[in-house]
Image (cartoon, rainbow over all chains, first blue to last red):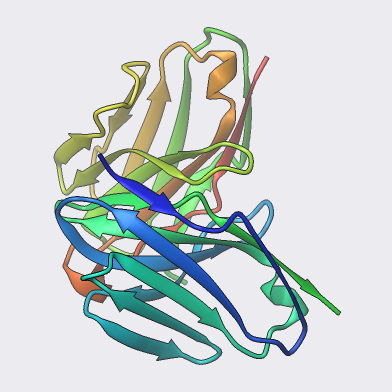
Amino acid sequence: GQSLEQPSEVTAVEGAIVQINCTYQTSGFYGLSWYQQHDGGAPTFLSYNALDGLEETGRFSSFLSRSDSYGYLLLQELQMKDSASYFCAVHNYGQNFVFGPGTRLSVLP
Amino acid sequence: DAMVIQNPRYQVTQFGKPVTLSCSQTLNHNVMYWYQQKSSQAPKLLFHYYDKDFNNEADTPDNFQSRRPNTSFCFLDIRSPGLGDAAMYLCATSRGGQGSEDTQYFGPGTRLTVL
């Protein structure tokens, strides 16, 4: 079977750095994506890793270790608008996507 | 602007009354997906089309069907909605390549209420 694990909630203050971890068990793994979803909104793409290492996109970075079946999303210089749910999603061969349970990030002033 | 459009944004139906949700895209993407998302849960993939090839997830109930008459449009049919089918239904598209080319672009979703 396939499974992903993420912390259910994370709280941080404005300007801080937060890391959201994701571990997965899957077959036919191709890559790991991260999505942001505000309440009532649709998921929006943040980052993607197919190879080991760090991908940086502005304030957001994502890391993947295929050997450890582990990845994380790093959010820097947190802003109030970053309060949202963050999902990791495994992309398996054949356009099969499985989302993790999501991490609700609360940014405090 | 190129985008993924879903209609209606809110749909109310009665228990057992068939309902159809629609999705259209101007991105000319090969793949279209349907997800179900219940409150405080992750999106769950129901099925997807790669061009005209239909791919059903193993645990998607038979009550859910889909049609893709052309590249731009995809429909989700719920034949006999139950109370447990009340959810947000998300349509997404992707090019269908590997790597970052397979980024999914989501529509705004249709919130389905079953009375």
